[in-house]
Length: 415
Image (cartoon, rainbow, N blue to C red; front, side, top):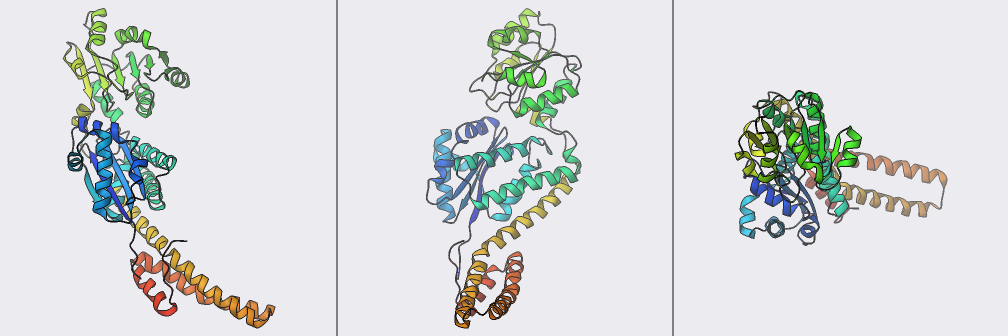
């Protein structure tokens, strides 16, 4: 029997390949494409991972790879406003369990991040998994892939210095800001209440800033501030707090700029423009108009600036990749074992059917039933152990061929 195994694919774009503006367009339009993608008969499952510096679509298909890629690319292109051919040129294809797993595990562990070793992406991977579950676009293979990615990420964090080094986009951005103004005692205006905002509050307090006021374009500032002893501000008070701020950290991901040239210029005029002001824009969709950087006395740092200021690769990265390879091997073994489950179930059913027939002939004798049951268990033990051994060695087809030859067993569907 020759079974076609499930193929895992990734269509990905990241800061390695594209300008952040193109990534923004892909991410903005493509985050919710999962249900549409799996509506195509060539694709069984889909998980979309969209972060501030990457957009990736993970696919599970048992059909022709080219057909699946064309369908997924077309859906992403339509959502992002690209021509299908243009979108295909932006997305790199990775095919096969090993390469796909290796890539995702490195992403989850922060080894492929703009700031190597950053930990925020691990949470984004978990949220992508949760979103796919909610959208009902998850398959068993993708579930196992993403669960193993989270385990690999935790292992890299626990067994290398990457987990405790404090590397993150937020940390690098604040280090760059500290080169331009004194953070100790600084007044901070925080725009946003998401994961970056949470990380920013912790990092700012660790650097000894003074007052932190928070504004949320989506109206969640009050609850966010209450939990963290911050000052919540609404849109009406934004101008006053902007004028008092030494540092602005914007990471709301609103649909358009929250701060423009007019607002920042007015704030600078109210302070006579003598005090240096740093604005950090960590939003992929740009919370701050890029023209603000041209205002005298104002420094604007965006994700591109953070990428340029990222420290060199740490020596712990090599150890991290070794851990990643171990988890790739474990995933491959787990998937191979699972692929033989229908064969093992079919063998057990075959043996138990023979057992039931012999018990019927024996007339219900308890002694005969116990003896035959023990015999059946003994006969099944070695083939079941060998199933796992063959799967881990990559010899699943040898095992399936043996069942077909010896017992005429040819399982077609998982049970």
